[in-house]
Image 1 (cartoon, rainbow, N blue to C red):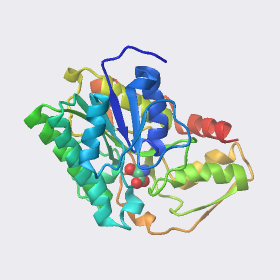
Image 2 (cartoon, rainbow, N blue to C red):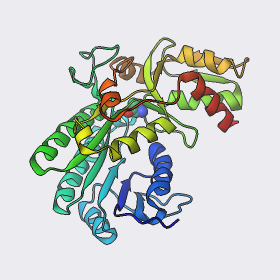
Image 3 (cartoon, rainbow, N blue to C red):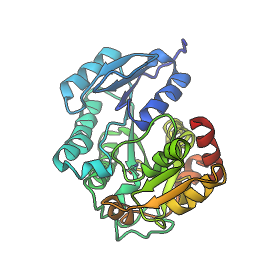
Length: 313
Ligand code: AKB
């Protein structure tokens, strides 16, 4: 596809759960040649430019930005909540130190806009659990949450000090069929579908009544593209926006799957991820995103389950 565009995008961590889908959406919008994917390994297939990029290597980052005349960065590379606890130094280096370098390289190279994925992991036990507001108490319990909340604070700083246009969403658990996420606490909400279709049973690592906010991938991509293309005057938060599609517990999700696969069974065997999940919100108030740039999800839980099963089957 050959679309005339002034925008040249670099996506870091493009092989991950969100990257694999977002890359296609960005290429549809801006043209294949205008979206440079990057990660530490070559992906199986790719219909546009791809660069090997370890985001802790800032000189390589600078090289890629200059070579492709990059104007916007979508910085998706990160270690998630559960995996992050296994190596806190590496998680801090990837999730925060590398991001800080990106911000500095962005200023030095006149980058116009940055997308930074934040997370519900920035919330902690002191945060109100239900309808968590945009501005609230932030004492995250994981290195993932600490690194992402620090990123949010720096977003605000770089915007005020250097005028860098940074846009960010606090993603809830993202559900998709294109790939299985690795290292998160909300991963069960994807794994369950593959196990339901293949084996008609699933052993869940969270307790039956653990409610968490979630979103279906098409809505997560829509929110990302809408926020990134919103006129500046509509963006009142340069640190991060609350975002949500719906909330459910493992038991509620299993019940919805049973409407399609009646003999599906779920078992519960909570592990260390239970503690992480309990420190997060059960539901999110995303009214600021709704008011500022007209955010509204297309999928509720029932519609998401139907679509997931249709695609996986
Ligand atoms: C995780 O579970 O770590 C992520 C997240 C909610 O940010 N999916």
